[in-house]
Length: 273
Ligand SMILES: *[C@@H]1O[C@H](CO)[C@@H](O)[C@H](O)[C@H]1NC(C)=O
Ligand SMILES: *[C@@H]1O[C@H](CO)[C@@H](O)[C@H](O)[C@H]1NC(C)=O
Ligand SMILES: *[C@@H]1O[C@H](CO)[C@@H](O)[C@H](O)[C@H]1NC(C)=O
Ligand SMILES: *[C@@H]1O[C@H](CO)[C@@H](O)[C@H](O)[C@H]1NC(C)=O
Ligand SMILES: *[C@@H]1O[C@H](CO)[C@@H](O)[C@H](O)[C@H]1NC(C)=O
Ligand SMILES: *[C@@H]1O[C@H](CO)[C@@H](O)[C@H](O)[C@H]1NC(C)=O
Ligand SMILES: *[C@@H]1O[C@H](CO)[C@@H](O)[C@H](O)[C@H]1NC(C)=O
Image 1 (cartoon, rainbow, N blue to C red):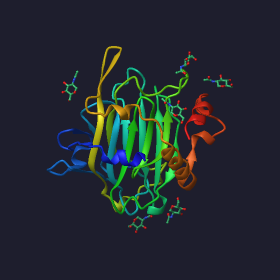
Image 2: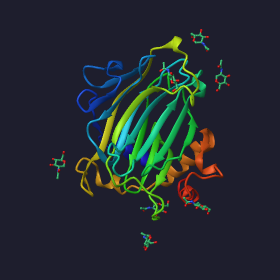
Image 3: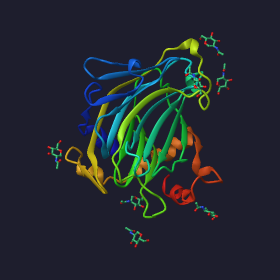
Image 4: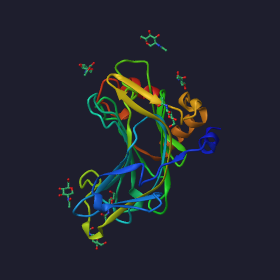
């Protein structure tokens, strides 16, 4: 069963002090001296964010996150992959956690952007209280597909299709980002009486190919990633879990929109359970 190999492979621990840099709100980022934990804080003056120094092209990325509580309406905490170089049009895969007035309404918002084209949102309720403890959120990005996992259970997949109108993120490396910000709109209004808010991140593990571009040539060094991962396709077990998670927790799926954001929608949706 896939879950076994996911958890028996050694992942490299990244250090929040040496492998990650603050991207904004410097004075709101609190990192433990051993680099094992990072707290992103937000108040009326600023939110905060951080990103890996390294860029990756394919790999497995695990982050343990404990979300802000109790009344986090209007706040959004994130864990995502994004291409830092916008010359080519931007690629991104997201986990965004939409705050709420009660932990029961917290939402997992996912999206995928390729060459600047997004609009591929899928939203889920949590199967647990995400503020009570740390839980694991993972991306498993290979040349064949990106899988989103929550506590090792896949909730979503986006496959590479043999169709030139549906781009797949494989032309440029991405960094791993985290952020915590005031949205005040999409996720409700922030009640500043409760500030400062904090989203906590820890045990950041990756096993990934380092990637870089040299002009138009995209390179990757996969000496750290087990080669069989890169060939991994969705197992039967994973397909069943995705369908089961959708039945229980799915709130919104762009595939159900009549007016698709891009014309490829019906084709890509047919291939992404
Ligand atoms: C929070 O975000 C909203 C919407 O962007 C903005 O109107 C408001 O000024 C922000 N508040 C603070 C304190 O940053
Ligand atoms: C909390 O949010 C839910 C869902 O958006 C809403 O129905 C409810 O009225 C809100 N409660 C309060 C006290 O704001
Ligand atoms: C991909 O599509 C092209 C053109 O439609 C076709 O020639 C090629 O055989 C396809 N490759 C695979 C692996 O299906
Ligand atoms: C904001 O939070 C405070 C403290 O929890 C609470 O007393 C107040 O009713 C909240 N305001 C709104 C508009 O929900
Ligand atoms: C690939 O990465 C490994 C481990 O970091 C390193 O030892 C090796 O020199 C790298 N190879 C290339 C071609 O960059
Ligand atoms: C992965 O599996 C699906 C069926 O589940 C198949 O359509 C697809 O061609 C496979 N992809 C690769 C790269 O083997
Ligand atoms: C999308 O499909 C519609 C109807 O088939 C067509 O009129 C439109 O031009 C297409 N848009 C793009 C961007 O391809």
